[in-house]
Image (cartoon, rainbow, N blue to C red):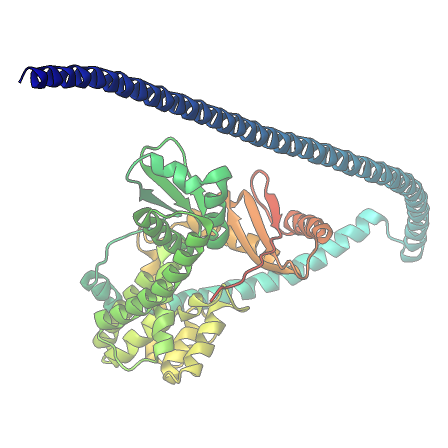
Length: 518
């Protein structure tokens, strides 16, 4: 029993010692494991830091390389731009040198011509003095042969002239008296007064400008466009002058041709509503407006026929009647004038017992030639008669067109009625304006001068006739010939026209390359 206690006590002590040693051993092993983990973590962190450092260094090197490449590219572009500027300056200097040479040659030629002219003038003076001497000698010989002095010969000649002129003056006075009696007999008819009292129409003179309202003043800048390309495109394709001034929210269209002005107005208003204003869009809208305007012209012709109660007229002739709306005669709208003549002709025909509808038809078509006289050579009387024959109008209508200005004698009562109605419509107070008509004729003549030159495609008179813009065919006219055309037109205007101030001639040569991707 006592041995067992000792044995158990020893076992217990041995257990305590072994447990203590085991705890020390476990703590030691745990400590070593912890230090190794820490070392591994530190080593891993060091490696990650070095890797991050290498990546950052690499990124910085790549960034610096990119910056260097961009800087090199920018330097190259600047150098190229400087070289281009230098080349342009050199080319400009060469062109200026060439111009100087041309001017010097021209001055030499002018000096030579002036010397030759002086020589010619001296020769002419010598010849003139010789001619005077010969003339005086001949006169002296004539005096000796005729035995009459110069004064007596002049008196004899004047007496003979007076005798002959007195007969011609008497005949002229007699003819004028007879013609005046005939005209007075026609115009004294009570039917004329009755017709004038029965018909009344508003007086409305055509103007040469149209005002287009803008939503705001910013729209002016969009209409002008970058470096003025939009406004130049509008003026070039329409032939209408755009006046953009200090007037708030408004643009003025100026042109002597009402049809051009109306097309330009509709085109500009459509562009303003659309909002897309650039050269290509301007041309698209202009083409569409021209097509729509043709429909409107036909509607105007049909409205005129409906107003007068006329039917059965060729569709082409109806279109020409509608075009009269865009023509003026001494400031009077030609379509309104034609309708007025037709109404008066119908009223007079009813008083005389003639065919009212035929009289109206003749009155409406009496100025039909004015619808094409700006495109075709000939007077509006001849052109109108040819159109009436072409579309198989009645012979009475054709004779009324030919005789309403006295070019041919009237062969019917209706022809005389149309001539009288035409005079009545034109002569009533305020119906016509001479100054506008003269202005339009001058601008039309100005355009015709440019159109007659070979190589010219279109000519537009703008700036109230102070500028003539000439569009030439680029395939036929080169840059040098363009200057020749400008000088030729200048000389024609100076020799054939009378005009106030000066006229600027601008020759435009434009080449376009167009393709359509499908």
